[in-house]
Length: 340
Image 1 (cartoon, rainbow, N blue to C red):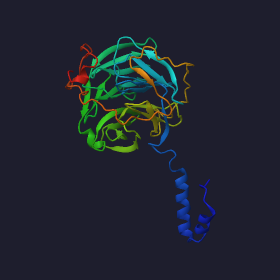
Image 2 (cartoon, rainbow, N blue to C red):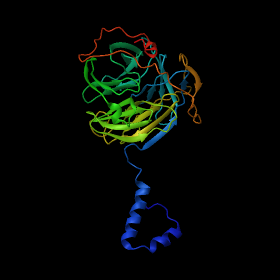
Image 3 (cartoon, rainbow, N blue to C red):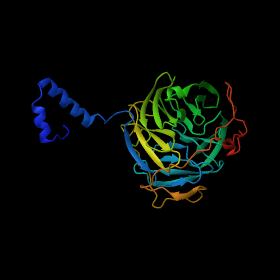
Image 4 (cartoon, one colour):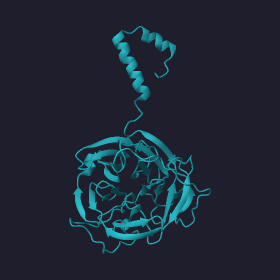
């Protein structure tokens, strides 16, 4: 159906030559439908109804096929969010870890991968709620993504010009440099994987790019409407099936946005699965959250005065060949002070 056109405009169209009239009508059709089905098109935005991270930030977001999972620095509680409306689901209180930064869901193992203390990678069993230290990387503060295509991990430090690709055992496969030049001149932050595509967000530009995995080609697809920095990204091929989206988060508020991704499932196997329905709790539980001091509401707006410490980037280095699983974890928080 054509978009509605007022009578006066119809009279104007009637006086146009046939060729120009056809072109004009085609343009009107595009105005009515062009925004649908476009990569980067925002399909949903809400302020999640969970406590915001008090006096700290959230740089971790995952999707387990049912719920969005959000972390807070210096907390062992993971928030669970209904992707349909942003309502709170039962949170996960973890043992074995006290500081969670970036997150990613491993659909192969049905477990979470998490970054803690800057370079420390943990695996989290969401059934037992136990976190197990696995290995160290250079850094993974706000960038960690599981790649189901080849069973690997992508990681990187905050606002960095590099991107690291690791084997699932923690061995460094390749380090990409000059990544900021592919992302509008801004340092990279969040990472998500969808089949043959990487989605990378930049720090400062509040933008999301779709890249080939060799980073030869990166295309701007969306801009995050926030006064704060865009952080972790996560692929979701269930909530909007048969469409796939990439969720993006704001670091200082509970704002989450789903951007339409390219056609295909997160693991690259084909058409996304049908929508899963999360189980909602009647009363969101926040007990145990060390930073839960305020509740996000639908009317809450980002606070422009919130800033990020400049010392959060760890100083750890890594060489090809990778860290081992026997590495000693960096104590939580010391990476923010530049100690490790």
